[in-house]
Image 1: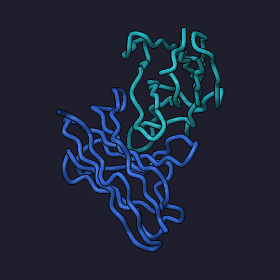
Image 2: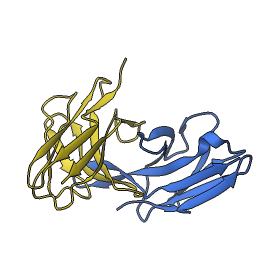
Image 3: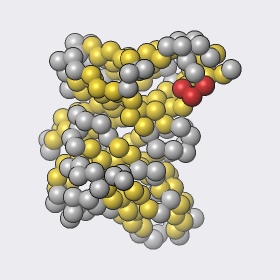
Image 4: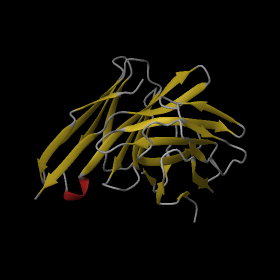
Length: 112
Length: 112
């Protein structure tokens, strides 16, 4: 079945460590997105990519990095520079910005 | 710049109607609507495109006023399953292309 998969579902890390969240899709989508969601809050765009080997910063890119080496994969690294990394992270993909976006099940990151 | 949603929260009895609004300070090319259940991924409801085209589920209706840069989602004869947080998303141009940006969400609770 086609879909978008995020792993792991839960992630615990010590403060000061970098951590990479995985996002893979087999929907043949060109566009991929990363969002951060804090409790009771909306979805804030971190990074997005419209094509392989190209990506753009969203509203809250500081402290995060991404790569898009393959169409299917868009991993997000939360670096030690991110001051408050504990949050729910959602990855999404679509054929384009004006088509339906499909979301993964999310990764809940807790930094202690 | 994120779109602004109103109201922030709504409580309904089963069978009642509700309207959720989404507005932007910039020109809109499309408006997306998604619903998220607690702890789950957002699920696509509808997309409205500039020019009048709409794609989405038959039981959901929405409007898009391009001149006023506003969209409204209409939930009629609400059911318990309608409970969740509703997000509107808009595609906004920036220097590197269009990005899909979401509002802060509207929490809807339907009671028996």
